[in-house]
Length: 154
Image 1 (cartoon, rainbow, N blue to C red):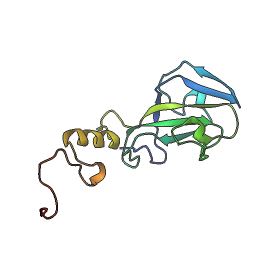
Image 2 (image 1 turned 45 degrees about the vertical axis):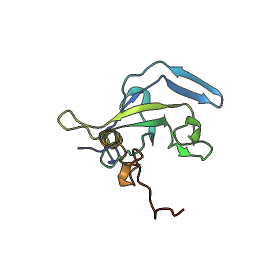
Image 3 (image 1 turned 180 degrees about the vertical axis):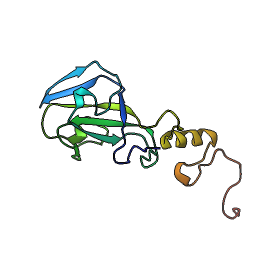
Image 4 (image 1 turned 90 degrees about the horizontal axis):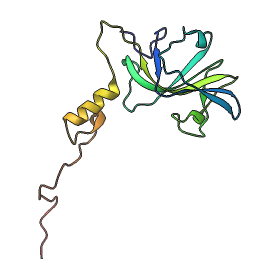
C-alpha cells in the first residue's frame, strides 16, 4: 500500500473548491476546475506540489486517504509563520504563477482498503463517547453524585 508520505507515491488531489491561480502579488483568478489531478496533469507538468496537513490525527506514514491544503508551482512552498498552515497566506512560494486550494488526497489502489487515521479517530470517538483521542484521559459523561475527597464535617 503506498502511503501518502512514501517517496515516489502517486497522489491524486481532488480540489474541494475552485482552484486559485496566483499570477503575482494581489493578482489572481479562480479556475473553475475541480477535477482530480496528479502532477502528471499537463497543467502541473514540471511543477512542485507542497501539501499541508489539514486533518487532526492524520498520519501520512500509513494513510492512503486524507485532505490537505496544496500549493503547486515552480518551488517548494515554505511556512512563513504569519498565518496557520491551513491559510493560503501561511506559506510563501517563489515564482509565479502558482495554484493554491484545499483538496482530498488519494494514493490507494483499487484492491486495497482505505486507510485514513483522521477518520478512524473520529469514528472511534463516536463509538466511545467520552473517550479521548490518542489515548488521553477520558472526559466525565455525567454527574454520578459521588464527590472526591473526605466527607465534610459541620
